[in-house]
Length: 166
Image (cartoon, rainbow, N blue to C red; front, side):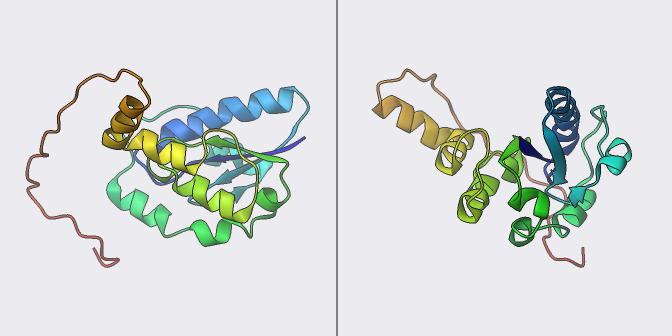
């Protein structure tokens, strides 16, 4: 089976995703599958480059915001459909953590592209990440859910800018 492992991404959990991918790729290859790796922030990673580009350990600290923003400007959603390892896969194995990899964003793109993937569909992923919606939906269906409350985040000492120049 041709399996493409989607990993990396641009969330603070990037290193966790890459470490997960190392284990998934090894397990799939040991069972005879044809495996490709695609970092949603960098693109296709050739097997010869995997050892240097996909670390097997999780870093002590998350990548800096500047580094994540730089990666996000790399391979964006529109180009995923152009990567042969994605178009030619029998299934995509999602080894993504946090951000667009868990909130339904990548799942939505994959549904539009029309490629099969592992895990929850886009709506389920989005609802799972939105705790208020998930709690309401669970209660409507008769599932018990613990009470929760929201706390406001402390004011930032410096305003966050999303412009490319900062």
